[in-house]
Length: 190
Image 1: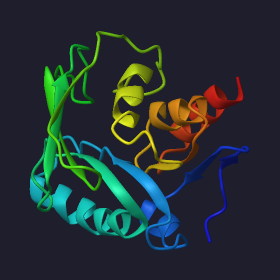
Image 2 (image 1 turned 120 degrees about the horizontal axis):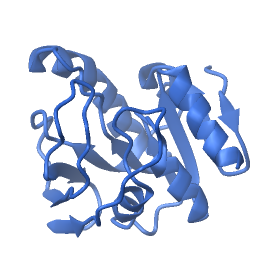
Image 3 (image 1 turned 180 degrees about the vertical axis):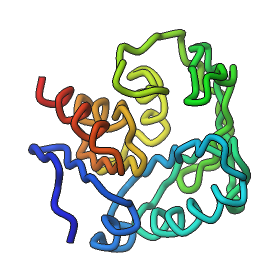
């Protein structure tokens, strides 16, 4: 069992690989999971798939609903695609600017196709190279308003767990980078 890096009454953060952390969770014990997998800049899409597919299988085992970035390649069949105007000029780790929109596949919930309009909001998370805004996280969480327990398996700057806490939901965040776990824990403590 992986010990939590940070925990309060609503949020638990783990420093580790989601394969190991999620092994301790029961099937379908999480209402909603976000799968925003790392970029692996400079790596091939085959390398990315070798790394992400086993983790995605574990996420599908524990979660009832999943929203996953599908900008790399389609992982498995899904019943809807959500996309939105990105509007925020993200700078990805290799220095390129991000997309103006980004496709996301959704598994679970009621079939629908949604365009989420995310207003242009710059983040102040200087400790993460491609931090997403809290507005982004709130719009993603709005896809499944009935969910009580949410999971972000590649937490990064943690907007998903931070907004879930503000909405009164329980949240689990996992990341392999201690600096990101520490940054999110600091945000949650303030």
